[in-house]
Length: 135
Image (cartoon, rainbow, N blue to C red; front, side):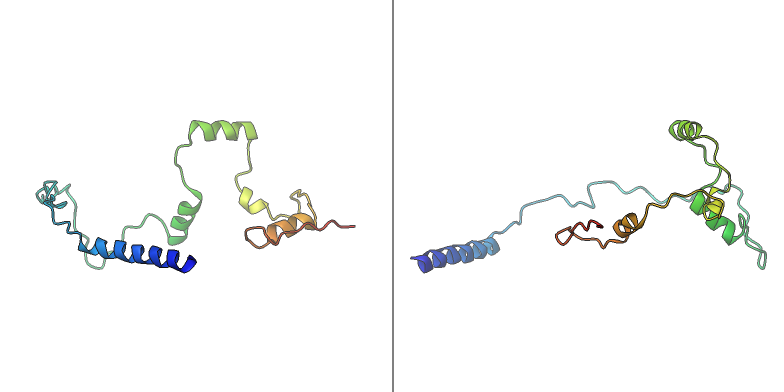
């Protein structure tokens, strides 16, 4: 009985898949590229641009290291109201805060090896996780 049920289900699935191949979907559809009109090509205005002189240095906005620092840490972009109020509530930070973090005079709190173990723990679904209580 069990094999008969499995064979009926398998035959039904095979017939269903075979029927999908015989369906013809040749109806009249609009061409998706012809639906929207293409704008004509237009030559942009001149804007009084001067072509570069051969052998002239490229007009750069600073060195590569300055451009990298600008990209990483931002520049003179205006701050939002939320950022300004958060900075006002936090107090004035030193301008070179990233440089002074590793200084020996910087006050840090040692959280111990438990926090280091948590941070260094491998990623996973937690199935193998276990708590070890130092004793």
